[in-house]
Image (cartoon, rainbow, N blue to C red; front, side):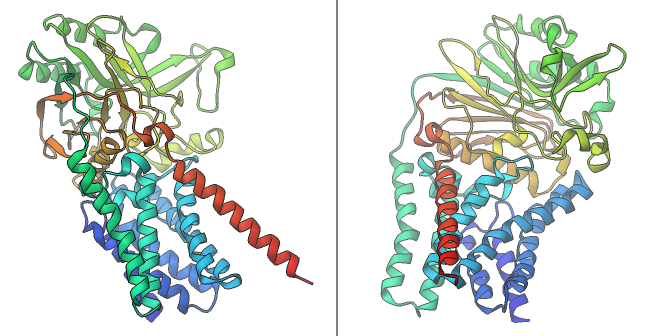
Length: 511
C-alpha cells in the first residue's frame, strides 16, 4: 500500500505542477516519491508496474483533453507515453544495483533527457510533456532558456529532485543542503538578472492585425468555403487601417483545397488581393489546405493517387503569405501530429486513419518538406511561420527571422486545459529565440508575446475578435537558436557511452 501511495503521489505532483492545471514549483519534489519507491520495491518488474501508474496519472491529468479529439488515440497516447517515461526509471534502478547510487543517478538524469530528445525526433513524437515546459507560465524564472532551450529546464528539474532526495537520505546534512540550494537558486538569480538587463528592442516594428474568426472546428469544413472567406474579409475590414503592415489569420482559415500550381488564379487569392489593393502596405499571412501534383520521381509514402487523372499528389497543411508586392509564398507544416496528420508506416496504416481520429478536413498522412520557409516583407524583414503543433518544439530553423507567427486552430479540444497549455508554450519559444510571437487561433487564445515571454495582449476563448498591436522585430540569434537541442545530443551520447561501459565491465568480470 505504501508503494502505491508513493506511485500516486509522484504522478499527482507532476500533474499538478503543469501549466493551467497547477503550480510549477511542485515539479522540484515530484520525482522524490518515485525515488523512494525505487528504494522500496523488490524487483524491476514491481518498479515497472508502479512507475506505469505514476506516469499514467501524470499523462491522463495533464492531457485529458486529447480525448475530445480522439478517444482511441488518447488511450494509446497515454499508455505509450507512460511506458516510455518508465524506461529511464527502470534503467536507473538496474544500473544503480550493479554499480552505485551516484552512478545510477547520473544515468537517470542522462537517460531521461535522452528519452525527451528521442521523443522530439521520431515518428510518434510528443514533446507536450517535456519537463522543461512546466515553467511556461513563469517566464521570469527561465530567461536562460535563450542559452539552453527547454531541455535545460528538464535538466534543472532532474538535478534539483536528485539533490533533494540525496539530502533527505543524508538527513539534510549541511553539505548536501548547500549543493541543493545552489542548484535551485543560481538559475533563478541568473534569470532575474537577464529579465532585468536583456534588451533586444530596436526601431524596427510592424503594425499587426490578428484575426480570431471563432468558427466551429468540427463544422467549418461542412460550410461553404466562400462564405467562410467572405466572413474573414469582413472581419479584417472591420478593424483595418492604412498603417497595418500584416494581417494574420489562423490555421486552415481558408477551407478550400488549393492547388499550388494555380495559386494566383485561385478565387480566394483573387478576393484577398482585391482587399489588399484598398490599403497602402497590407501583407496577409493565413492558414490553408493546399495540394501539389507530383512527378513520378517525387512520389513518397505520404503521396495520394487520383484515379480520375491517374496522377499522384501531395496534401499539405500550409501557410500562405500574400505580400503587398510579389508572388504568393507557401510554407508546408513540417512537424505533423502523429496519428492525425502523419501516420507511422503510412502505407500500412493510412487506410485506417479515419478509424483512429476524426478532426475534420483531411485525414491520413500529409506531406512535409521538412524545412522552414521565411516570408519576406520589406527592408529585409522576415517572418517565421509555425503551424499549431510545431510551436511545441524548441529546435526550429527560424534564427534568421525577425518575428514568429503561430497559426493554429485549438478548437478540437473544446474549453479545456489543452488550448491554454498550447498558448503558454509560445512564451518559451519567444524566450528561446528572443523574438516577439504573434499568434492567431481560430477560437482562442490569440495574442502577442514579447521576447521575454510576457503576454502583451490576448483574447478569450470562444469569441470572434481581433487584436491590433505594434510588434518589435529582432534578427539577432540566441545561443540556443544557433545550436538547438545540444543538451539532448550531448546527453544521448554520454548515456550510450555510460551504458556500454557498464555492460563491458560487467561482462569482463564474469567467469
